[in-house]
Amino acid sequence: MKTTISATHLIAAAVIAGAFATGYMTGPAFADEGRNAADATVKFDFDFTYHPDELNSTPKATKLLQRLENKVKGECGMYRKMSVNEREFARACVAETMKTSIAKFGSEAVAQAYKARADG
Image (cartoon, rainbow, N blue to C red; front, side, top):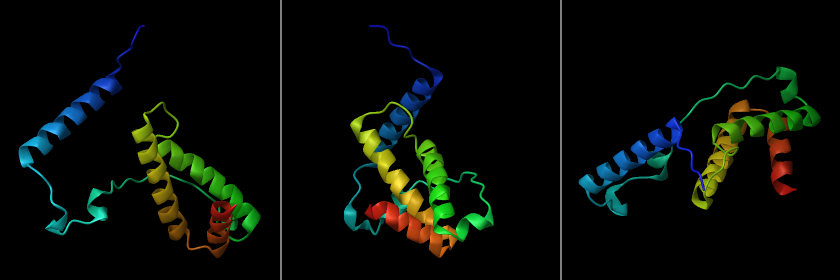
């Protein structure tokens, strides 16, 4: 079986090794130190263009949501081969990013379309 190692794999291995070494050197983390989930959240931005008319009606908002979800999945790494744990992390990334993005639109039609997708 032939395995290819790309620059991406090497960079990922270096990052993981660095994180492991840092974690090992700093000692254990305790839950009672006042840390919250927001400290562990990775923030990122991405470009997404839309027309203001898409925020006014549910059918247009539904199409906007489909485009947004595809973009978010790409940004969270869902369109690549990954392990089960990575897949769970990517799904959580998509869910959180979608919720945050929907709130930023400030549109009732988009919020309703998102809720309808989640319910159905």
